Image (tube, rainbow, N blue to C red; front, side, top):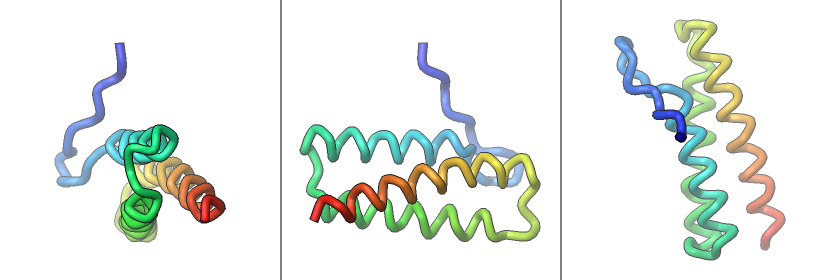
Length: 86
């Protein structure tokens, strides 16, 4: 049974699982050719920018930062993969 993504915390931020799920979903959509690569690039770019802003927030607690860093690393890997598909 798949793990349920974390709901919004008391701080109003989504759990890193939401971002990981988004990256995996986009990667699967690209692999199955059910999304245009240009659309995927735009979505992944937005994810990288959003996660980068969140990770760069000095008020973000360390336990959230580490989860977001993992999601950011995965999104950056997918972004590089999409760039090679030109």
